[in-house]
Image 1 (cartoon, rainbow, N blue to C red):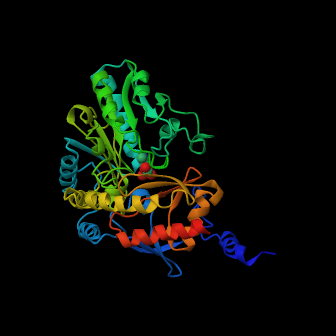
Image 2 (cartoon, rainbow, N blue to C red):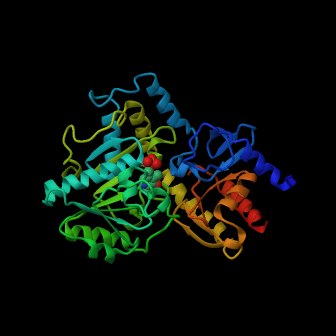
Image 3 (cartoon, protein in one colour):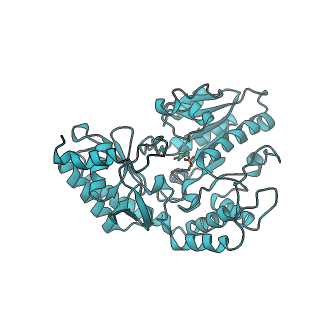
Length: 406
Ligand SMILES: *Cc1c(COP(=O)(O)O)cnc(C)c1O
């Protein structure tokens, strides 16, 4: 009935370990039971090197002791108050995060998509109240190939058919231009444009790095035309690219930073919109909020994350290890790899289709104890926790070489 080589895959499929979980994902066949640092362990005790880091939410590694300590300390005090009252953790977190960003104000939320939604609302309110756009007409320019989350408004300006089809009607008010083309943004701006919303590096798109000078040019255009520059740094920010923010690679400061993922230290969902008072200050009491946003547990964790980033140590690691990883991956080009795009410790590796799909390679790497995630068919994304060692990176790239050699 089945050949022995098929046995393992077929067994995994027939014995779905998550029969009660809605199938909105297609996970690799591994059931993680424990994690520490860059390693996770499955229910059978097999260890895997985690090169995905929960899409950069686990930048500091699984259960980083300093973050766990901050969490446990706060668990012993108070966890949730709602914003109907103040709590003694939110202001210190907001002050530290604002300082890290060089901005005045922080609006705390939970997930990345909520930070994006918040950014959209702030941009529209700014458009009407400050720029003077006629009511109901504000528009936001976005880039093709974007990923900003999964809410109905956000998928309205996605061009990913899987994310969009059958989920309309869509929210109007967005104009899509090619990514990496600043002139296209300039041409798309009208008197009704409130903001440009882009990822400084497109993550889900496959670690797409725009041409040098793009972010600087976008900043200039936004200044000239009185349009807000909103940088979605949810995946690219907080150390991943060897700087605090991907915008730092071009010395650019957006009007609003959208942050999430690693801000929660790999423990809790913590997101935020950070900006100056002249922009973020447009939001008035009652206009926006979240029951859990800014809760004391999240704030304690987020503040520890900001403390850790303020030394520059993790950014420096990402820079150095990124250079190391780049050299190792370059050696695979022409040997099953067509292209490598890399920024800090964040790589998009395009697999030669004759060697299989990105998913095929991810499944074979899993068998060898390395966890990665494919994106857009042929790409695998490598984004290990920033606490990884050079020797571990070398071992992982060696496993990829062995998989490609078949
Ligand atoms: C992951 C991601 C989001 C959405 O974050 P969630 O926490 O999954 O809602 C938004 N923007 C970017 C760039 C992301 O990578």
